[in-house]
Length: 462
Ligand SMILES: [Zn+2]
Image (cartoon, rainbow, N blue to C red; front, side, top):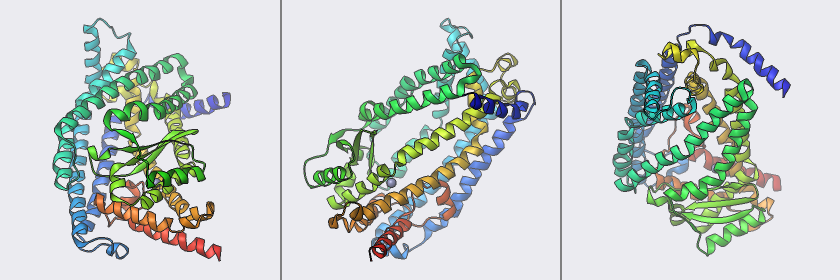
């Protein structure tokens, strides 16, 4: 522990200038957030011409009827245009909020609100909660029209929207209620740990965040998801017995097997698993079950179980813990830094004793460019995991010594193509756009990958 604290102190000493130098942080955040948005717009400009191509790539030609390919190109174009304008719109909004001192205004407004009900500025945690919710509400309202447009115009036009205005509104309020019910106690505990642990908060906060994530693993599927979707046990039949057999051969601790009514909101479809190490749940979208044969859905599950076999979720969690640790290790330098708050228009008396939540929020904004780089790296890791899971499905026949699984790669390929065709997913992808945005390899890449994994294992067998 002491080594940890010495190292953390060293970092803090190097960043000591933050607490004294009057740096124009606001200009810095404005420039970098615009740079990220403009880069994302540039990626869309690179990607856009690919939506004008008239033919699918050669490997896919036989799977796409001409009409379907045109539909997917039209859908891609509409989505790209929407992403282009909504990206610029959101950035302009953020930029205006920064320029006019919206964060400082919200802090004062939260203070006034609490004063009315008899709580003074000594109740920093209460004021912090009020502050975050004022920020959250006021900044989400202007982007509501974008959500409405995306759901009821864009997705509707291409036949994906199943949401009714009633579901849309109730989802919105349910979302806000959950954000408040979970967010307020989370924030209170988070801020309390800072007060209690003082400058030795890093290990305590890490422990708290990990416990919170583990609690969510249990709470999300049992309490939160049922508020939005209906999960029902998968019916007895070919699919169920195939998946149960596969899970038991792999010693996957399958507790429950659900079908989810994903089609209530959208016809995009998939499958996933979750749960604690000794008790896992598998969830399959009703749309996937309807559009693919049982043996193909089984192959999708074989891929998913590959993620489990190689501990991908655990590895991802370890990476994200390291990420959180780095952020927290840098934070103390920004925690007691009046010039930082002054640069974002906070009044002198607030800046003199920076509230933790304000310092943390401003610190997060300063990290924007770093976070963009982190997200590119995370996507690269995630794509690597997808390769591993695909290879796992192809090699299942050797692992389980089961000849019936010899065509697992073909079946997975068929299911992926069916998913792609139904979702009208993008077929032609710019490499830079893909490296930045995609957590999965493209369909063309995956089909080629499946073929080469199969070829490699046959070579090995000879
Ligand atoms: Zn996957």
